[in-house]
Image (cartoon, rainbow, N blue to C red; front, side, top):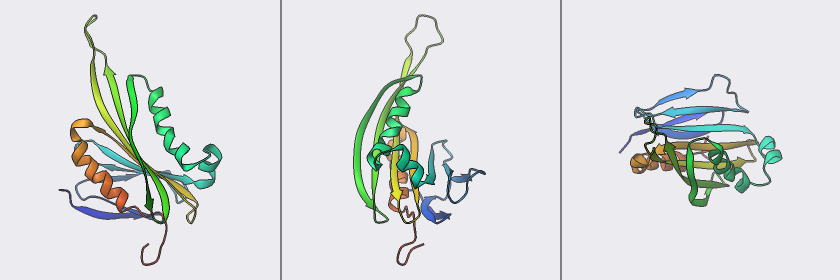
Length: 172
């Protein structure tokens, strides 16, 4: 079980494991940016944010925004299979948040000319939220090896449960 501490910047907060490193993209500012939460095992979780107006111009709804990672993953070379394993809508900071669990099978070519390549299963987890009060969208996401799914899944869930995107009564 991981120990957590709060991470807050530019008016939003979440928790992260105390053993993880936090790296803010130096180009980040209040309106747009990203931060990486890096585990010692090299499994990372990211939070990206940007102007809500920009997301609304590109996507007709929060659900369409949440479909974007599926489309992007399918375009990557080496991706053999992509499927949406689970999707749920939850209330978070007084908004709907779409949480997606995506299964990805990657094909790894063999070094030998006529040998069959191996496959590797990965999971991508993401949360999309559109926040009117802060006029920003937020995406929390991470890719993990299937064998680390339970441990990393717990960390991801804790980061989502603690996520706050704007000031509410008694909170940031």
